[in-house]
Amino acid sequence: MGDVSNAALKLLIERMAAGGLSAKTIVNYAQVPKMVVASVVTAEGEQVYPRKWNHDFVGLPIIDPKKQHRPTVTQAEVGNLISRTTYRFAVLFALLAGTGLRAGESLALKATDFSSDFRVLHVTRSIWHGREQDPKTSAAIREVDIAEPLAAVLRVYAEGRAGYLFATKSGRPLAQRNVHRAAGVGLHAFRRFRTETLRRACVPEDLIGLWLGHAPKSVTDLYANGLQHDREWRREWCDRVGLGFSVGLFGAIKSAPLQLQQAA
Image 1 (tube, rainbow, N blue to C red):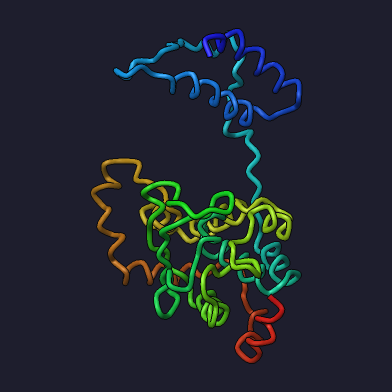
Image 2: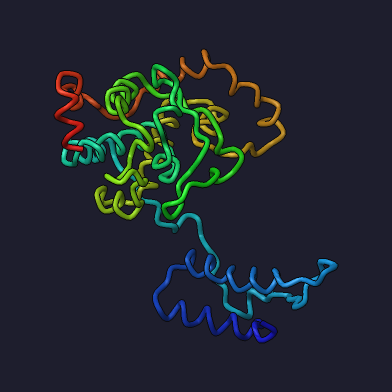
C-alpha cells in the first residue's frame, strides 16, 4: 500500500490512456487507488499513508463537460423502440422515457409502489448488480407523477403481477445489460429525453428536480421544498407536459391483456 505513490498513479493513468479509455473513465478509475489508500487509518482515525496527490504530475485528464458524450433519444426513436420490441420491454421503455427514472429504480418497481390509479409512483429502492438497495441519494426517495396515458398502460401491465414488475421467469429483476441490449441505446438516454421534454414545457426547476430525484442546489431550493407536497400543483404540470411521445400503440392492451401478458 505504501508503494501507491504519485509515480505509481502516473504509470496507471498512462496505461489507461494508451488503452484508449476516455478522460471521464480515467478520472473515475483513478479515484479507486486514491480512496483505497485513504481508507487505511489508525485506531484514532489518522491516515496510515497520507498522500498529497499531484494531478499535474500524474497527468490526470481535465474533463470538458461540453465535449462529454451524452446520447439521448428523439420522440420518433422512442416510438420506434416501443413498437419493435416485446410487450414487457415496450412498457419499460415507455416508463423510462415518460418518467426519467434511473434504470435501477425502474427495475426495482413493484405494483405496490404506485397509487391506486397509477398516477403517482413512490420511489423507495433500486437494483444494483441484481440486488436490491436504497436509492442513489436521499433525494432519490421521492414521488413521481405519471401522465394518464402512461398510467393506463401501467395499470393493465401490472394487473396480476406479484413481485418485481420487470422480472425474469424466476422472479428476479431483469439485468440492466439485458435491458440495454434490448434498447440498443444507453438507458440514461431515456432520462435525458424526459429532462428535455420537461425543459421544453418550461416546467419549474423545483419540480424537475423532484421528479428526477436531484438534490436541492441552493438555499432557495430548500426554502421551496414544501412544493413537493402540493400534489394538485404537481398533477397540473404533469398533465400539461404529457409524455413527449405517443403510447397509442398500446391501445389493444385493454382488449387483449391476457394474450399480451403471455407474450411478455
